[in-house]
Amino acid sequence: MMAAFADSDRWQAWDRFVEALPDAGFMQASPWAKFRSRVGFDHFAVTLKDGEEIVGGALVGKWTYDEGRCFYYIQEGPVLPGDEATASDVFAAVLESVERHAQAEGEVVSHLRIEPRWHCLPDFVRNFRQPPFSDCFREPRNTLCVDLRPSEDDIQAQMRKNGRYNIRVARKHGVVVVEDNSPQGVEDFLRIQRRTAIRQAIDRKPPSYFRMMLSELGTRDMVSLFFAEFRGRRIATALVVTFGRRATYFFGGSLAIHRHVKAPDLLIFEIMRKAKAAGCEWYDLWGVAPPERPDHSWQHLSAFKRKFGGVEITLVPTLDYVLDAAAYEHFRGIERESAKGPSLDESAAGQASAA
Image 1 (cartoon, rainbow, N blue to C red):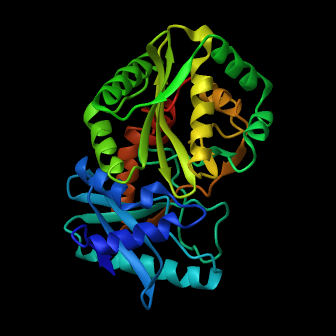
Image 2 (cartoon, rainbow, N blue to C red):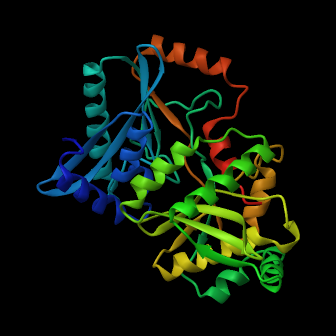
């Protein structure tokens, strides 16, 4: 079944289905799809039902990478039921629907890319391949999640010693953490995030990107802006997305001044406390360097995130299903030429730095 935004009842049913799953991904929620549409990426939806009950499906984005050529991209999906036999049937139905959609597409569709939140690859996923090199269309596959279900004392106890120490330092200096989604909060976030991107020499998103994200995700209270303040000045910030049982530290930044007060450390801890109080079970720090890659460009950022403890999670790799072999080779050629630039996951993880 294909869904359209005009049918709000179907979207609400889909969002409720995804949100109830243990590994719910906000990139499979309709506000994220609407946001992506506003920044220029088309999409379509596939939902599978058993009678009136949704059993799985996917929000499928469309990425045009050259004139007349595109690929499909399922972020944090497809969404499958827990029963393996049913999951196999749903996955096959999603793939069949995608192939039919590609045949009717006005452009040549080179491949389908999936990045599900799976910890291991199911046996029924066949004929997919890992991209041979990192390109600019990719999200982190290694992340760090803090379990928020224990007591606050236990959450702090499992942190690394320097993390607990820095929180005490920030409190001693009088750093306070506030939430502010007001127009002024948006401006403060953009200012701090921009300065962080410039200082770290990473590509940054335009202000319109964040404004649209905050607008769409804000309609469902899925996004919040947090700030660490020192002597009345906001010196660190974080954009946090909440969906299902998980809060995700998605973007952030900090100013170069007053580093000694350790504001980013207290900011992250207070966000975790607030997420726990709101009923979240996990806090996702969104991207760390793979443990086996000491030379990885995220090492500094990852060292900051690892101070908060948590569980290191490795998701299945990015996977491509080739729909048009010649077009896929063309895509690979284009990406080889641009491989010297930062990939999407490098940009996302870098811009989430509050260290």
